[in-house]
Length: 183
Image 1: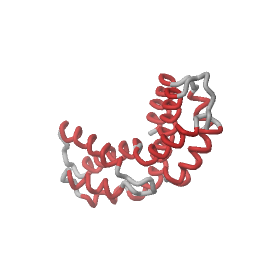
Image 2: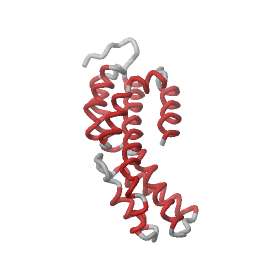
Image 3: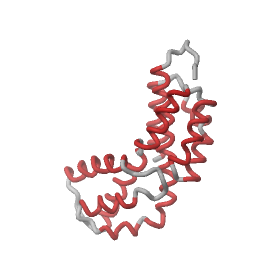
Image 4: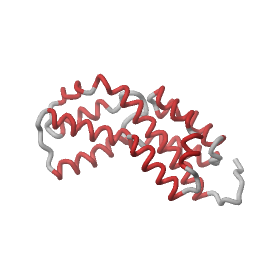
């Protein structure tokens, strides 16, 4: 999660915007703390919009379109988590997954992450479905229930940060640098 958050997101900022990753992460500190404390992309959305507008200078139209869409559809942290949990439980139960099975898991984790609600613990039923799909005992979910809340907090931070990164990229692509925000 940290590699995705600070590695991939920093790289995207460097490649597609003129923003410094250090300044960016400093500016969105409030967003990250809100996401961490609520474990909810939806609850963090008002903070994301406000900070994106006020501290990052993202236009109102871009923030108003990209951030709610991202809070609904962009669950990259959840997809990463679902895949890792299924692989972990498969290893615990000594259920081998072929290379093609792992590719299928990757695809299903990405697709099912889109269906996850932006609330705490929403991915657990989908993980159980993935376990059953790969003939892994679904009761294996009990192995991660004790730490799921902490991991939920971390993946929500990743999801929300990715939303804001994409909003910054889209804003730079659709708004010429010499044109001020008109609302």
